[in-house]
Image 1 (tube, rainbow, N blue to C red):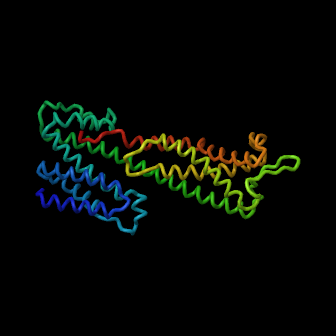
Image 2 (image 1 turned 60 degrees about the vertical axis):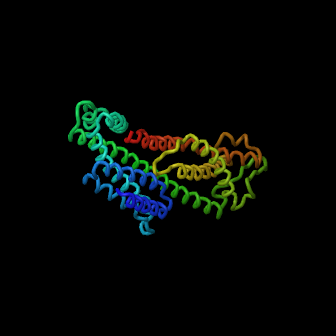
Image 3 (image 1 turned 180 degrees about the vertical axis):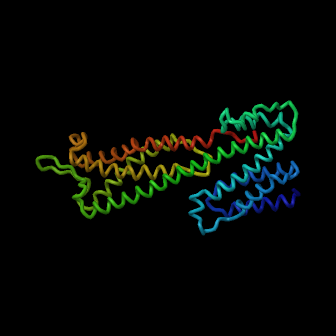
Length: 324
């Protein structure tokens, strides 16, 4: 690639990145594309890699329009289409590199492939059987390319599973938000349906508010406060992921909403004496503290959600860059 053409190429990529708002994943994809194009040029621009590189370049240089934006984001169309094209080109290019210099390439490539393919996978077995000092040739490139494609496919599938988990969290959050608001509206119209007060004989009555239609919203606030403490603890244990899909914000929303619901239902149960703490709560302050603690208690229910989210996020970062 000539210097003027390379400069023009870089300007096009920079313009596309500037125009594609809220698309941090494009930065990494653009860097990978630039590296692959340089590698392809060094290898003589093999036709087998050009089609995939052109596909990835087209996606990167196409600024997403407003039409179908939500559907594209939900399905991960731009992200997964780009990375799958890049991975296809990378498998071809690295296969050619390995065929030209197996001693330099095979150790790093074999170590990376082993992170994604099981030991009994025939493509990994074929790669492991190659002797780096035994010569070069077309079979080396073919074996390496097949193994890399299988490993990239496994990696892409894990990212797709992460996106699916993110979408499930979003759906759960929307449902919880709808039900929480509906419960608050119904109880506000008729506070007797879910009293937010504690009656103590002979005639003491402790409420978080004025025993009117605004009490449940105050209980929601206290429950969210308790859930916020638990959420901070959970997010501190959740390691950052380089994946283009994030879970922390959606996990926090689910925890906040569950904290509000736990607090409202828990305070109602305290008022009826159904919980053991009913005998301990003897004041308005005690009832408010119970609401906060009950909001924090959502952590018991979302512990399994934290575990599942951590497992899905860990699955996308077991391997290193195959470039070594």
